[in-house]
Image (cartoon, rainbow, N blue to C red; front, side, top):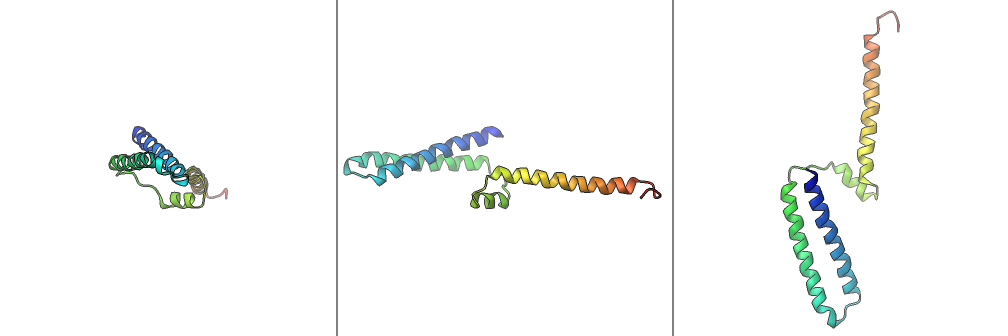
Length: 109
């Protein structure tokens, strides 16, 4: 499973780098750089195709909407996982406390 994500991550990193380089070419465009611009555009199209191929391997993966909200807020999406685990741990402690209370003999409360 991790290999699928590694493959996607590799393609995304290449794609982002090509976009960055395209921005540099476009911001200082000279007619002599047309061939480089065309090449970069072709790399971007190929990169999108590679990313789309990865999508087919990851069709069964679901991402909670809250993760995207974290990203939109500029927060690290790994914090979502951490906070979910912390909430689950706290809830587990609450339930454990209730169970322990229910197990106590009736005269000790």
